[in-house]
Image (cartoon, rainbow, N blue to C red):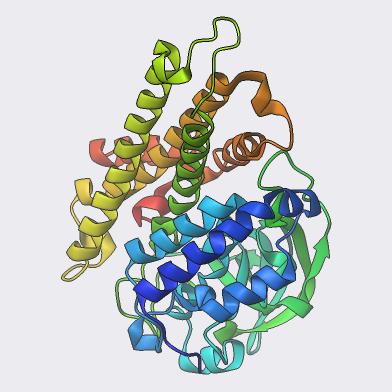
Length: 392
């Protein structure tokens, strides 16, 4: 593999430098339902898509927090672009679960974009040398401009569902070239429209054994990014970047703004003062929790795998992450209430931010199941979403 290595500082500076242009093109991205190719290639040239590769795999070796801050900076400019960058840069994380031959064949450079859904929506029939994969997956964020596509599937052997020693189904994730999958134009949604998260499918596609992996078996990667929840650590950058952008927008427009009915300045109006103060408070707390828990987890992984950490350490990033999505939704909703009817017109960026954050908050990572799983794990019960705690 070959790609120029960049520092965390320069990558963050590059992300911040393109954010104003992303802001100017936010409506274009939203209307066209995909990220423009020129933006994709500029992000590629900056090194955005290689940031998930660890130093042991020849990458820049960014920490999870450093990656999250890059995603946050891009999302400040445009939510969908930040979301796709977060998804697309996971190539390096997946590489840690592939062997050297698969990496050489699938990832000749570090800057390839990976899209797709890891949850099993397909069937993989074991055959000599690999699998025959069939399935249709939803929510293929970044798939319209990706180089590689992944898809989770249940493994079938001798006509039967293959099971683990514990009795559960065997699930593997399959890595395919983008030209091997069929796309369906299904992504006509309320928010995150620019992510182009269309359906995609394959039918009886042969996938070599070494082009598939399980999160339970690390191969090329042994470090802190070769953990099942590594991608989830950087996800809060998207809602937090959007919330910060919305806050700054409203603070800027508040200068000189008057209450129509009374002529009172916003600067002197109790409601405006309170709502802005409340939103800033919630943002500071939400972002602070993410930063603290991700940094703490990174340090703890010096000596332990994620699954070996004590319960409180394993739930902390999950709960802070879910809260970041929910808090960002509350912040942007409150700001729209403050601005009033002016916020509902499409030229106003609050319209896009509100639609984007509401769509983001429907993702499984922001669901009640995450909170239930944390509580169940602490009490010795059954988590509904064990994956987020590194349990499966």
